[in-house]
Length: 370
Ligand SMILES: [Zn+2]
Ligand SMILES: [Zn+2]
Image (cartoon, rainbow, N blue to C red):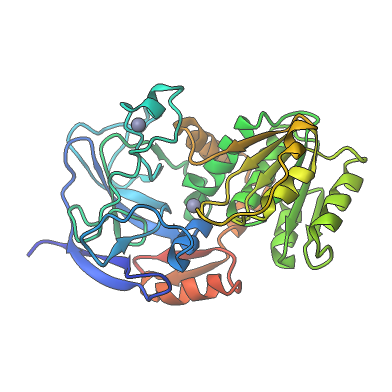
């Protein structure tokens, strides 16, 4: 009998995940079969489970593959694969991280500046019932399709540190680079989840002068300070948007921020974040992936002050490579191992989602082999 592995599949918004068993696929040419060690519950996985985020349904199945932030080892290399995307030799047993999306390289989005926002990049997100079954992070295996971006994890980077690299950390690097963050900048981070916390380290490494972080949860802000945030604002102490905007102005010498990163997943963060910007500042929207969630906005706020807005989703291969470099060389300076706050066996995925949904867990990691 063929070897089998488990997948935790979503059955509907706020419905329990179910564990399914499928034969372990043999990798086709150019593919890699990954044994997953650790898979995180990212904010976007929660949005999907809650039913706020509605990506195209693969159709034809009541089961949906979920999960994208993970780390694993090479279980089997497909024919023709012997190096990672940096040219380093790749062997079975090597620990790896990889992009969970696959830009096609042949569409207009890919043609123009090789933007990561290819419209076909999720073409392999099949239902788990469809071969190769292991199409997302919540399973014992992950099938890394041809056309992937993959990097070997440096030995001194633990699984707990590496797991957020392919979403939170690479995303923070790409977003801040696109915003042109650098020396002398004052940066506001709305939301101290996984991306927000890692963005503090990235901003500091890029030379940013002042980092101000906002969140509603004191424990998250404590971690933000451990990562080196200069100022933290708790929404409990500053309950209205106008109070928060006034406080940011005060902290930035009356000028406002040069860059504000939206990492809350909330539409109403938009008008507030733009109002925190100084003249010529840039607002970067990353968190809100929920279509249909809106907030009233006065567009003269952009025109009168020469402000820009960037929407950012995904990142380039180099962002993930840099994420590993940062984890390997700066772990004395930033407590990267604290981003994952709790661990659950994969079979307790429903408890992990319920706890994180209730705010009792900041970032859960699932252990497929526990
Ligand atoms: Zn994510
Ligand atoms: Zn494309």
